[in-house]
Length: 411
Image 1 (cartoon, helix red, strand yellow):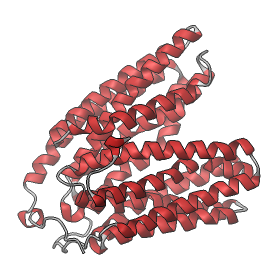
Image 2 (spheres, one colour; image 1 turned 120 degrees about the vertical axis):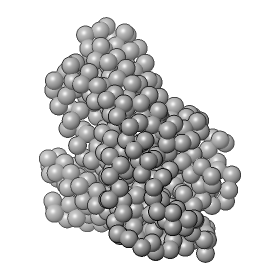
Image 3 (cartoon, one colour; image 1 turned 90 degrees about the vertical axis):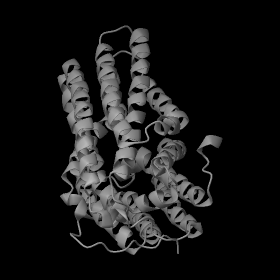
Image 4 (cartoon, one colour; image 1 turned 60 degrees about the horizontal axis):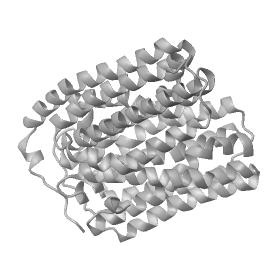
């Protein structure tokens, strides 16, 4: 789509690298678990435990590698994370038992989390006056790449043979390596000057940590459409099951078409705080509508479900745009990678804990659980503006020699 093509050369290189990489993400998200259960024949319980371990390992990788990107140059560090992801994925082909699986998936997941943090200084440096808007471009492109990868993975799932799944793994590894190769076209960003003071400044920034925690709670919403809605549709309502795919398709298309536009008006921390508040209310409405679908006739349940998906997606775009804005605007330039690595901790915890929470509340408890989840998002959205104002206050009193560092030069 033309509006997703950036104006500058470096932005186009980053976008191209991101697009290739997210094709691998779509392949893995769609059929990665099935590879280990169907091709390697690991028990599903062991796969779940291994993925949980990998999720917690990845939490510490983002901040550490983000700090390396700040100190040693973001392009090189980011490229290394992509190469490590490619090699770790290739090692999936050698997995034949639980512990080799854990080692390989921890390396792959850790490299993925590290790459998100290492890329952040590149986005800030080459994102122009509004790196947050460029980040919104990348999210829209991510949805296109993931969708394409999911379609390609469908072939392996349909064929269902060990060879088909192995070809899928090879495709993931090649896409990761190709993403790293594209970065050769990107001018290097020299590391920023060393600033006196504690090394892990982000961990001492309590207002930023509070925003990270709140954003992590809000990030549980990403699991609503991928975990709670499919299970709710199968177990509690009479709508046709193909609506699981229909809901994801509607969500993806809306994000591709409107994420950039939604981010343009959220151009300050205060605007981001307002977007958090609106997203919480949108999630409350969507969760309430989803709870009402139980016991309805099929046509009514299907209609209400899709309305809820649209409202949820609007809230998702507001939440994403708010996170883009506050995470960049409230982070000092010299520690962008470290701060964005810390900010990723919230989403990482949501990834690890969100599915079990949603299943316990929305599926096991049922209709009341949807209202509890909606209320959780609403309260979080209402608290967020207070946390953002506190972080802005702290930012105003940050030492001036830190703020005067400016952008790192291009090599």
